[in-house]
Length: 414
Ligand SMILES: *Cc1c(COP(=O)(O)O)cnc(C)c1O
Image (cartoon, rainbow, N blue to C red; front, side, top):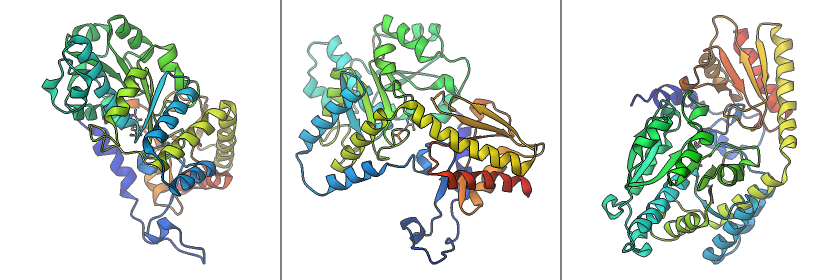
């Protein structure tokens, strides 16, 4: 498969990330500065490659407190997972080291459950130890939709770590009917339709798969807010489990992720995961991350969606105002009331004038001091090349909004 996204797009974000030591004007050197790294203002997305998101002071405080003493890790995991299930209105939850780990563990759990359902001589304690031995599982095929979106969402490949055979499915109802077999363990759904037209949505695929008795895992890693998405996919759509990144919109530690849904699956994920020496031993969540994750989740659920929305809208309005004034009708600015991936957040679309393009603009803003990361659509979206998007989720304050506007205006002044 042609990896246009990985090869063509991400290097752009890295290429300009080797700046000379920043000028220090008598300020204290920060950790990043001491390493010779320029911090970046994030006006694009909760990209992991930029650091995801920023934790709230309460979250940092909880991590610090957790770091100051020993604890029975199993008991801590029990408590954190119990609370995460309650907060997300799901029967079960498991906190792991990221959404990717969540996809791998929940796939493994489905392979165990389905294999035991198919063959009553297969015991859980044997299967728990059997990964990644494909032939140990009578149900060892995991279904994933095919499409260009897989360049942007390459996490599907990681399913192979369980030993499962990944079966690519034509992204329509007929494709599903053809692909489901006596070996199917689960169907993993990624947010494909948000990247590419013509692919069955979760709303269409989950009910169909349920009818056919196929277990469904929804990777909704970046599908927040609204808060209600924490239970929408499982309770309303009927997916077996849903997965979220802790380090994106939840603003938890970067190395956390949540699996929520059916308790038989989340319980098995727990058994497969660290501290047990099994499939998930490499995806360790420490006491600090568990404390940080739970605190971040509590804060996220407690904050009303409109409050988050209004905060972002104000910052984007400030950017739009500065840009309009500085560029005097040169730009077309469009307000969207949904995020790039359908999330509940405002978004600015800015169409650059003739002869200018989004990638070049990003290259410029990333080279500036301070560096600013602006949004550029990946090829799958089929957007015009002069379109940039600005997202205020990760902007700290008005000053960062101002610097973002100045960076974009600076590109046009060249
Ligand atoms: C970001 C993302 C992931 C990876 O999340 P981590 O928490 O960094 O492991 C997986 N799936 C999708 C759809 C994502 O957007």
